[in-house]
Image (cartoon, rainbow, N blue to C red):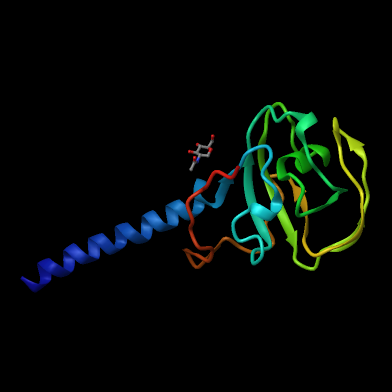
Length: 159
Ligand SMILES: *[C@@H]1O[C@H](CO)[C@@H](O)[C@H](O)[C@H]1NC(C)=O
C-alpha cells in the first residue's frame, strides 16, 4: 500500500524534474518580443545580466527608436539595436543575447548603420546594454549539476 503510493509520487517527481529541465533548456528562456520592445521593458531587466530575446522578421527600420552605438540606452528598441549593431538581419529576425549593464554610462553616440539611425545622448543614463549573436556564450552557466540555475518563466509578448 505504502509502496504503491511511493512509486506514484516518485514517478510524478521524476516527471516534474525532467520536464523542468527540458523546459529550462528549450524555448522558455527566450523572450519573444516585438520590434519596438525596449530593453527597459524586458523581464528582470533590473536584476539579470543576460537576457535572451527572439526578434520577429521584418521590423520596419523607419520606426526604430535607438540611442547609442554599440552600447545602447535602456530606452532603445532591442531588436532595432540588434539591427543597428549588425547582429540581426531586419528581414530575418532571430535570437539576440542582450547584456545589461546596471551601472549605465554617459555620452551615447548617434550613428546610422544598417539602415537604422540612432540618436545621441550626452548625459549619463543608469541602464544600458550591448547585443551579441546567438552563438556567443552567456557569461553565466544555464545549467549546473543537471539542475537549471535560472528560474523558468514563460516567454511573454512585450508591446
Ligand atoms: C516564440 O517564438 C517561437 C518561434 O516563432 C515559437 O516556436 C514559440 O512557440 C514562441 N513562444 C511563445 C511563448 O509564444
